Every structure is written in structure tokens, then in C-alpha cells.
Amino acid sequence: MNYFDAYISLIFFTKIVFVILAFTRIYMKMTGKEKSELYKKIVYLKQKLELIFIVLMALLLIYLFNPIKNNISMIDRETKLLLYLFGFVLIITAKW
Image 1 (cartoon, rainbow, N blue to C red):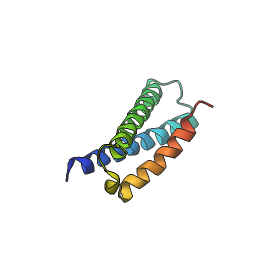
Image 2: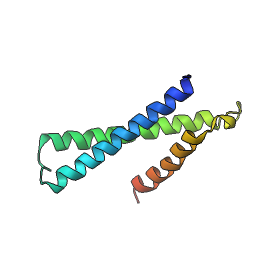
Image 3: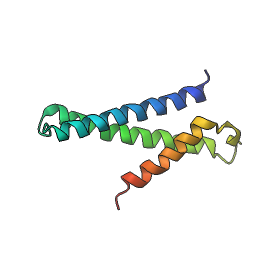
């Protein structure tokens, strides 16, 4: 496994943990545990993971579309999926 594959795996892992925290937050909200310390920690971690994901994706975009190096050939199926999901994340989380 090279560094690029490890980086893509890190981004996927970050997104999976984010989704787990999002579902946990929804479950806790539905069961009325919104005032607990655990709920506050989950919300905090979810926000931080979202920021980490956006920064990691921005760095990936900078690396892939660097005009000095031609890295377009490195865009494989997993990278396309990440870029696709990143677009949705930006639309959903935008401060309209």
C-alpha cells in the first residue's frame, strides 16, 4: 500500500466514523438524551470530524489538480467516490 492509498483510506475511515457519530446523535435525540454529557461530546466530535474531512479533501484536491504535476491519472474509483461525496457534504453543510 502506497502513501496515496493510505491517505484515501484515512479519508474513508474519517467519513465512516462521522456517519456512525451522526446516527448515534440522531438515536440519542430520538430517545430524549439530548441533555447528557455523552450527547454533547458526540456533537463536538462530529463537528471536529467534519472539519478534518473537509481539510483532508481540500488537500487531496490540491494534490490531484496541481498544475505542475499531472496527477489526474491517480483518480481511481475510490477517489471519484470521495470527490462525489465531498460535493454533497459541501452542499449540505453550507451556511445558506
